[in-house]
Image 1: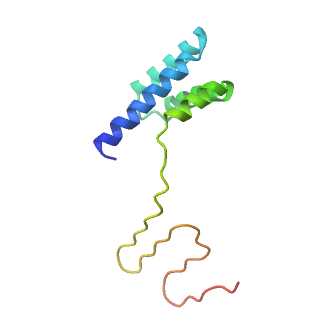
Image 2: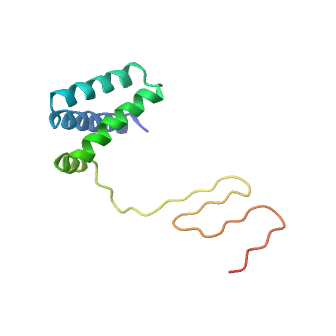
Image 3: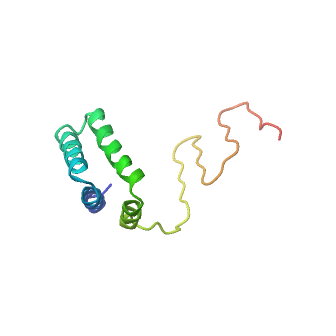
Length: 112
């Protein structure tokens, strides 16, 4: 991820947290602030990250308007198709739906 994408992701994350905070009552705001502070203080702590995720999941589960607001913050995905690259000896790559992929010597395709 490049610098511009990192800034965009951080900006969207901040806007999402702000929206969630604005939709919570005083107790909910305090819980969210504590979860964010713990996750920021120890970014490698999986428990702290999980606690923050739980706060956001709870907020989204309880508030339909917040779900709509956060959905609107996400970048729209354009239908650009799929680019698939394989590199190196005996490499395989697939895009879309692959039913069977066999590599190596001495194999035969299974019968359908």
